[in-house]
Image (tube, rainbow, N blue to C red; front, side, top):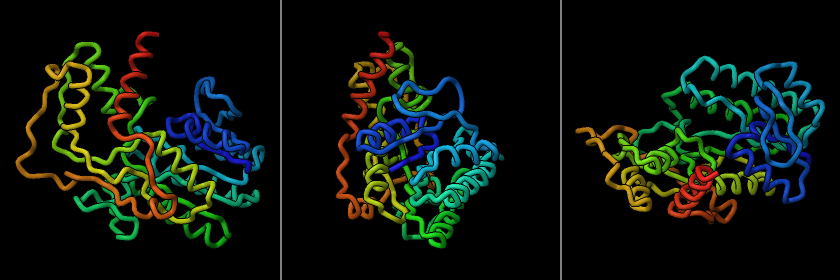
Length: 297
């Protein structure tokens, strides 16, 4: 299949492109700045917020499958969230008009109301507190209706909390590792929270499997396991032998509504035979090894 992956230079996108290419598909990835990623393959530089460039991209690549991962997540409540929704809507329309057949859009756990209940695809509790979550949810609703009208095979994957090699230094796990390796103190302010982590390599594997098996519908892409953030942070400190550098702030007197954010993954399991390859411990160890290698180079 001819597959176009927007946001292909991102952490998830690079793993998706690698897997889809190995499976024999003709894959093109997009990037928006710099000289492009070092990952082998065909790359197109494009500003997806530019209508002319979106049109040129779809016309030149003529994809059978569109995997839409690109989005700006730097400001969850910024005005550009609406811009990204409108640009994504236009991209999908152009894709269909060009003869596209299958669509995947990346969603987020933030589409759900983080109210302490298990996040289930069919419980209807989509009440995001952020513009980002609302925009992603609006995209799903649009694409679901649009795809049904035009006979597109459509999949929406709600991605929860990532871990694994390649994450930006500002993310929790790499931030702790970098600090401790530099013999710097790390203050954990979210230790009382429970979050659902899945290695980015497994996230990409499940996205690709949903695409290749043409599974239509919306799916949670997560581990289904609530991990206490304090336990994760403490485990990293123990592994690096620097637990003495970690400070934990006290939990609030009243538990917050978002104390626990965890996914129900039964639907994904039934569709694919859900078996993650990397547990959280392996993911952390691989991240430590990756960061140490970067530091040595």
